[in-house]
Length: 375
Image (cartoon, rainbow, N blue to C red; front, side, top):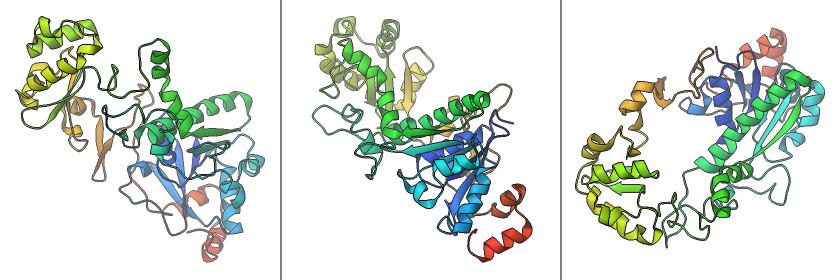
């Protein structure tokens, strides 16, 4: 049983960071009940639906709303993935829910936050990381910024921030007996993820006006990716002097050419020389020479190949659930391990069982179903 065993979380169905947050909480042992629309829900191969149950409700129907509010009375957390004000319009906003359950954590996940001039605007990861400076910093010199998938805004800045807030609020509620509202915004989370670069800029170690000209943005020859003889790639992160010395030794680099590691004016020519060196061997050959050493080296893998890497196999970093390869729960707990209890559920598959467990009588369920209030 995971560390959150005994907690009940209602997750209003959404996309991206909210279901990711629910997935992590479910991995940790919480009973996460996804509230799907009657007649709909994510596909069974949606990794974020693992470990969850699904209840289908018609939240445009007063009886469907009342059903949710009765569920709120039995819950510890509700996750709201909608734009600000949507829950209030449905009659399930924080004030209403906290009146039914004063200990409830009402966790709200948005892009721009609950207030401010952009609160009601549509947006996506690429937009949230744009106004925090994160996107500007990524890419090659002289080229346009490169979107880092949707990892920085949605997942790191959103889903992880949501989980962090929920866990902290649950700790506080355990002592105070009072619930509260969490305003988790992807733009806030993305801004937090940029903390190191604000530090570097303040110390004069980073030029925020340029791309591919700093130590960690691909500007340094010792922190970048390189193509191999077979067209595959490897990554090098030899920042510290002792690691850089080992890189020079393993790659056969001369002290004359590569002695002045941190002279940024020499980085372009050293990078060009490294490009030529790494093209002399295949990815597998470089792995044989450098992997597992303190060079700070790794092959650049496609994510569909990552599960087969020996290091990932040894740690069971990936698992297979109902035929779908996916990341295993993390972090790892010594006494209360996380687990994936089941794969994805179709929309509404658990409606009758969940509501029955929460005290709904069989006759009530039949009436709600016949009225179209539940699916």
